[in-house]
Each structure stands twice: as C-alpha cells, then as structure tokens.
Image (cartoon, rainbow, N blue to C red; front, top):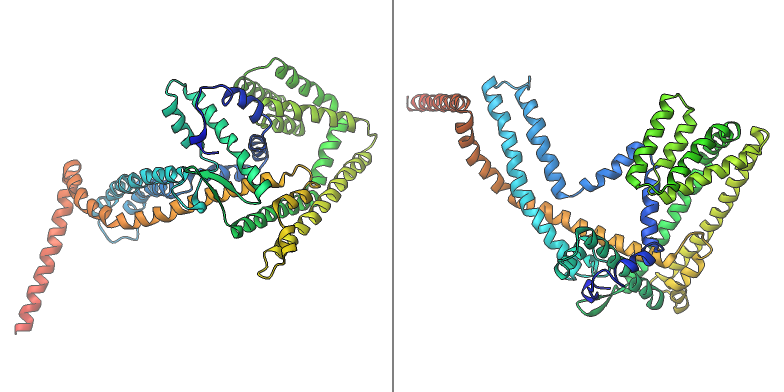
Amino acid sequence: MSINQVSFTGIGAKGASFAKSYAETNKYTANKELQKEVEAYLPKPIQIINKMKSLVGEVPNIIINALGTGLIAPFFIKYNFLSKADDETRTYSALRQPISAVLAVVTQAGLLIPLNSLMDRMSNSGEFSTKYNKTGFQDTSHIEKLVKINHPELSKKQVSELAKNIQLEQLEPLINGVKKNNTIQYLCKGEKVSISEAEFSALLKDTVGDMHKHVTTNLKRYETEKLPKQIQRGEYLRTENAKVKPVLDSILEKIEKNPKPEDFTVWIKAQIKTLKANNADKELINIVDEISKRPDLKTIKNKTLDVIEKGAQFGKCKTKEEVVERISANINKAITKMNGDKNVIEEMQKIIEAAMKPNASVAEKAAATAKKLAQKAKTISQKDFVYDVVQKHIKNINGNVKGLKQMIGLGVSLAILPLTCSLLNYIYPKFMDLVFPELSKTKHSKEKDKLIKACDHSDKAKQEVSK
C-alpha cells in the first residue's frame, strides 16, 4: 500500500489501536525482535562486525578515509625515518593531510549526502524501475516525512509510531499479491506494478535457497556444538539448581513489579556485578547474562521461566548419564525434524529448477507457484513461505538501491577528485602562510633555493653545449 493512499486522520483506527492489534502479532515485528535476540548471543567480534554494517557506504568510507588521512597519516609523514627530506619539509607535508581530509569531506560527502537523499526519495516515490522501487514497502524515514507534512501537530514519538504502523500495513497487499497472483504487486503512482515472471521465479529460488542454508547450518550446529554445551548446562542445573532457582525467582519478582525497561536493565546489570563480586559460579553468571540480553521484558520473563522449568526437569535426574540421555534424546529428535525439513526444502528446489528450464512444461510451471510451494513448506515448523518471499523481495530491493548508491558515489568521488586537488593546491599555501608563517617561509625559501640551483645547472649545461 502506497503512503499516498493512507488517510491521515490522526492516531486512530489506522494509528495506535491498529498498532496494538496488528504490530503485536505481525511476523515482521516478531522477526525484528527475534533478530535482536539472536544477535545478543553471537560472539562479541561478530556483534561488533554487525554494528559496523551501518558504516558501509560511500559517505562513511569518505569520513573514515578522511579520519585516517587527517589523524594518522601526518604522524607517519612527520616521523618517516626512511625519508631524505629535512624536518621542516616533513612537517610541512604532514600538515597538508588534515586540510586534504577536510576538503574531501566537504566536497565529496557534501555532494553525496544530498544525492543519496534524492535517490532515497525517488526510490520511495516510484521514480525508478522495479529493481530499485521501494513503493511497495517504503522506508519509515520517508513515511515520517510525509506524516509530518500531513500532521504537523503530532509529537516526534507519535510520528515515529504512526510511520511504523503504516509501513507494517504495506505488507498485507504484498503478501496477498503473492498468494493470489503468484507475483509481487504494488501500487505505484496509482497504477498496479508487477515484477516479471523471471524475476519472481528467481525470487522463489533464492527464498528456498536461504531456507536450505538455514536448515543446513542448524543441522551442523546441533551435530557438533549443541550437545556438549547443553550437557554442561543440564548437569549444572541438576547439581546446583538450589543456587540458580532463587536468583531466577528474584528476576521474575522484579518483572512482576512492571519496571521501566531501562530501570530493569540497570537492576539486572547490578545483579551480575554482585554475582561476580561474590565469586558466584561462572555458569550461573552466564545464565543471568544470557537472560539479560533478551530484547524486552516479555522475552526475558519467558527465558527465565524456561530455565526454571529445565532446572526442575534436570533436578529429577539421579546421575549425569541421565542428563546426557535426556539431552541426547531431545537433540536427536530435533535433528530428525530438521532432516525432514531439509528433504522438503530440497524437493521444493527441484520443483523450482524444473519450472525454470527453457523447455519446462505447463505442469512443471504450474507446480512451482508460490501458493503450492507454501503448501509444501507448511510441514516446516515456524515457516511462512509467502511471508519469506515478500521479505526476500524487500531485502533485494534495499540491496539493489544500496549498490546503486555505492556505484554512483564512487563515480562522483572520482569525478570531483580533480576539483578537490585543485582546491587543496590553492588553499594549503595560503593556510600555512596565515597559521604557520615561519614554517611556510622556510619551506618557500627552500623551494626557491632548489629552483635557483636547477636554473644554475641548466645555464651551465647550455654554456657547455655552446662551447
């Protein structure tokens, strides 16, 4: 649904009440929360890399390069023991780098930032082809701007919430288009737009490919990593549940008081510090730390109850062997289920590949519709194939626009490089004359001496030739 179709009548049926009923049950919102939850359990280096994804792009690259040029390069130029230049010359050259960095940011980033904003606006407004068209699922930042224009009386928080709800509402026609018409459809400038049959087939293939990668990765993890870690945790809960239970009960008591999320975060961090100060078991600290990293109070409560339940189950085991047996049975059951899912996914891949052949029959093409593939995918737990197809499309469009920005940004940066260099050559001598006159005077004097010596050598050479 295009933003232009939304009736802005304040935070009403299309606003807060809609948010409460729709956003809480919507898979898009749930998946965002799940993503945060999963990221919290990734190793620290991976978490850092994930956070650095926001630094990818031409403008961040320009800024990072400028920081290196302005802050790091001068040090190596000034103290380069391999250079034959004297100290004043090295200092003069080193001070050139910060000016070069500032000019790069001003000229290149100064052009790219408005250019990127223009491209985002054009993409969200349907000015590009379907490959770069975000009209079907617009950026919240774009929707917020339109909400502000239509509702200047709303607060910043209200604008943000309404924009999120409008964006979520745009998922419904996309999902319906896949179910009913076997394609991605949306309204662009009042007209219905569909991606091509070849693009949609590739989208189905990529979605099933992602499912296959996911189940294969999980199988490997269960077969190699899960058992040792779960045995360690299970044995600890069997033998030390008396230490664990009171700590978990205190977490539930705190949640029952309905604290503000930020207050609970401060409280649970203090609990972890206290456990460490009291030399508590490392496994107990790990349990509380894992719970604290859940994205909200609801998932924190669910995780706490889950650990309490496991503690009760493993507490009934008499020996470590019983713990191993119970965990092995659960893991083998999960592996059997995942192998079944893998077989279904591989069957779906074969159906799509058959339909994409140049000489595919009508029956083969008919078997590869999103609706029929979704029926097969129903046996896979926690899978909504049609929803995944739509999400894959949205991800592809975002990736295409990002790639287009990077290509245009690189072209702009290269095109403007001569101007940046010319400005540097013009500004830097004047800057040095003004800020560091003594150093500038010494540098200019040495350059003049070199020029005179070069002229003297040239005159002597001419005299020799004339003789």
